[in-house]
Length: 203
Image (cartoon, rainbow, N blue to C red):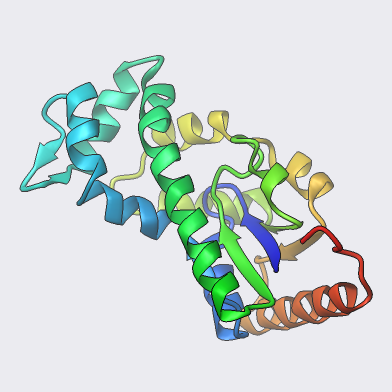
């Protein structure tokens, strides 16, 4: 089974591309959705133990968590040490479920794919990208987003140019949704061709 890693910096349209891959018939493991689920489940008390006061009504209060992360230089590393193993476990369970069904290809939506070394566990990489000005406009239009928070997130992410250089496929999300949908179809078609041709013998 071919494991395709989908990634992209904040505001680059990765989540929208994941929906287009799902629309094209590929099962998608959405890391953001997994984290959201974990924050209202098993990860919530673990996060609160390290970031006291973040547990509210049985779930992690993301705004309070963001406030505390901004105050602690090692905050993101501590948070990742809690959440990443749980996300990896959910991802492994997803892969095994799809493998049991005989699925040919799956999309692993991984926000910090390069940053976390996840490229080692995928067979091909797709990067969602767009012009930095479009990215900036998208991100700053989000609720509760500030210039400072945006810059803090960008500083933790591998530069877009490097992601593009290391990708097997790039989707420019700065155009219409139809253009992106067409690019997704081209990528799926090419991956099927390569898979049939025996390029991914270890997949």
